[in-house]
Length: 295
Image (spheres, rainbow, N blue to C red):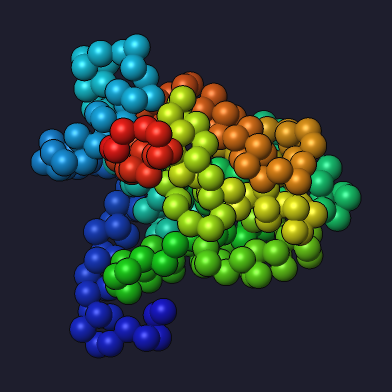
């Protein structure tokens, strides 16, 4: 993408990079504070997105009231800004010494690698986002699935940072490329938990409400012989924890819909630990089962 930018776009890319580069040079505490402050202020302005978040939270956690939802939304914007600033450091900082972190479940990756088996790290859309990929890439060679940004400047701004750490970026439409990586025993990071209404999808419950969900993960495992490991990154203050769960038994089973439902249930368990860390601003419930009222 970089070589396809015209002169004006290249200048815009340089100008957009400068503030990220400056934030990346700050100590971690300062990065977190700046990211938190900017995101909290921005969160007050995007009222439509806040409405979507409140709506999603009311559906997922109907037992909680407006005060709880507002608290979660405030916490979410703080986490979103903090983790975005950490991503800037991962893209443009001096990353020879990663932040303090631990790994739980490394043995599940090592066991699969010893078998020569490909690995799907089944992540979710949480605030650490790109920083989660950076952390796990410090321990194993990672191929990351991504959606190209419609804006070529933003696409290059992000991907030039990502390419520093991953073996390869794979377009989410490139199924053959994913299967090749997995059949060669590679590790694929992907997050397929957002609303998807296509051929490879099903109406599955997400916090009790049936909505369109991609069934691609079990299908990839079935076609490539890979193992699926639920993968999450948590943060307490400035310290991180990489969590790699063991593979779910008999997955793939041959029933992609049933397998995906089990993976979604695992995702829900993680979200319940810290609801503010999940990206509720996405319209997760926009495509619901036919018998349900429209969003």
